[in-house]
Image 1 (tube, rainbow, N blue to C red):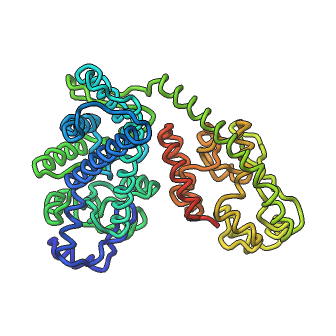
Image 2 (cartoon, rainbow, N blue to C red):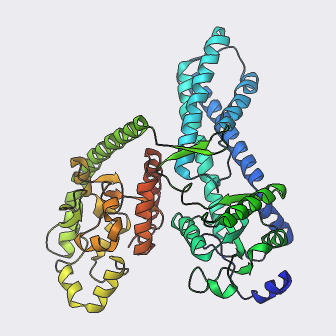
Image 3 (cartoon, helix red, strand yellow):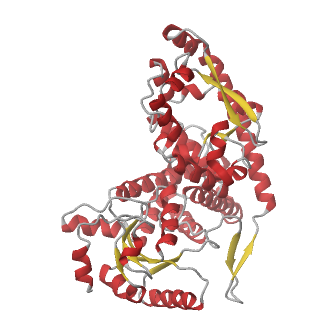
Length: 509
């Protein structure tokens, strides 16, 4: 069957992105070419570079004005127009050497945060040393450098956030995505799709799949909307016909034939200037790092530096205690008002005790502001239909047992504030896996020991990736993703997203 016939055969199929994004809507040719240009990695890198340069220039100008106007401190005899020729190229080179200009579809937010912090810190330390050695006679103000450094971090991070948000919105609408062709068996490609779906990543537009089996073999194994475009021997013809930007290979390396095919596809993709990604359980693991040994040509695997993990865990513990202290003070101030509002609507206790499974596997308790009727548990058990819905997700949308004031408390997560006392006591972490109750232990199955290896959190990865709108299965996978990829940088990203979600009251009910 020719490719044009295959296209006609699947015309009624819905093209799906690698993370389930909608297909691009019809656009005028000029706008379509613009979005195609925006989706190219080179254009993304240029936008990020320009944004970063604007950020560091704006930070320098504001810092210079602040030091001269408010602190009455002169920065020296070098005019700003002359100094630009020194610090702008040096800034761009430093960020380039730290590999800061990967496309946003290739770098996770917490990795980008870590990279920007390290690159900016090294840049300013080096610049400060250069000023001291080569421009010592100009008498640069230390206040200028400190303010400039802080503002640069703020502006560059804000620029990255805006650009990432813009691209994510384009991807959500099916625009500026990279065309991807998947090569491999359906069951393995389904696992690849799940990885991207958990992270809500929609940067790829899946044109179809080239697999060893017949088209009928895809039924019941992977997303039925994925278009089957032919057998493995036609992958190059399919890739050229669809003008794909990326070929994703997911073949088991258990036979000599598979290994030869993978190497053949890799070599041919390089000749055709098509990016190629190898889906492998080994390289996709986060239990270890790896890098290429240039002498042998193979990858060397090594464990994460223990000192780095110790420092990050210490920072996490200090951050938990600080947030717990501040949150506890705020909770004490809020309690009289919230308690009065609850009492006026439904007489009863102000607080609700909730059990959770601790890292030791035993039951512990924390308390929240009560948001439901006094006899809410009894109401649930007396209503089999309501109980069935609750058992499905351990949450109820439009729960009839919730008080009017309770809905407002839940909308802005104020009902969670008393948990700060448990955070201060060390029983909870501010960021961590979901808090689960006794009845939920069975739903994790063999993954329960892994879940209990991390302290449960008030917020976490699943909340900021969908909060209550996620399915229970997705929550489990998101908990495992968080544990596998934990770093203090990931926690900082989750904290920032949590405040943004709470302010917008997104996904809460």
